[in-house]
Amino acid sequence: MKKFLLLQIRPEDAASDNEYEAFMKFSGLEPQDVHRVRMEQYGIPRINLDDYSGIMQGGGPGNVSDPEEKKQNYQKQYEADLKRLLDEVIEKDFPYVGACYGIGAVANHLGAVVSKEKYTEPVGAINVTLTEAGESDSILAGIPKTFRAFGGHKEACQGLPDGAIHLASSPSCPIQMFRVKNNIYGCQFHPELDTDGLIVRVNVYKNAGYFPPEEAEPLIEQVKNEEVIHPSKILKNFVERYKRD
Image (cartoon, rainbow, N blue to C red; front, top):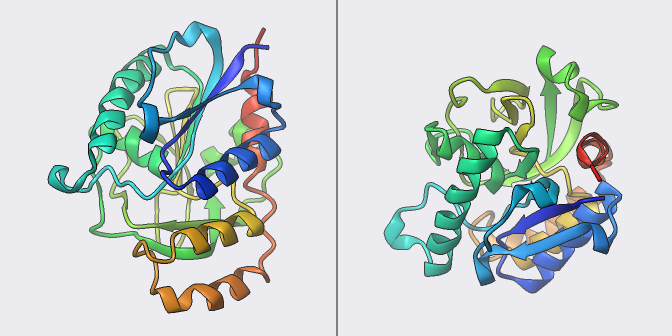
């Protein structure tokens, strides 16, 4: 099988390693099936898409809508690299699924507004509801029309990119998931996150402005009562649909 490319942007090793392990666990992939790229360390090397089955992208503390003068140099570098890669991904309609930062990167690349103006969501579990198009999309097969998912983001898509198909929404963030062309997906929520993974991120990012630091422990106790089991099927479905020899 040709490998899947996993793109990550988390500078913190604990969060990055946990995210990597979660993508592996829920996609059903083995280490030899994945080319892991920590974009914040190395940027993105020159990629020949013919060598890969598909691309998965995680989230992180960076925001595409942050003012350029506030972005770290490594973010400016990986955003330039990602722009080049997304040009080819979109032109070829190459299989891609991006979570959180990933949906913003694709939407921004296609000219949609991504900002902190509206639709931010606090860290925690949310109700996500599939649209009619979402209910019929094979990437969402086996997922109920309304399900619980973990989210938490400072920026959001203010509207769909031109030509994108709306797949899912939540009460506080209308654009939770979309598809571009036939094979390019963005998720505002985190398909790779379960309760244990969210607890890791709460501890890592408790001083990153997502919530007041003193709320970390109450938030951890709150999410321990959540049963978030459906979003991870997206990763399994993605791999099953696009893996190739």
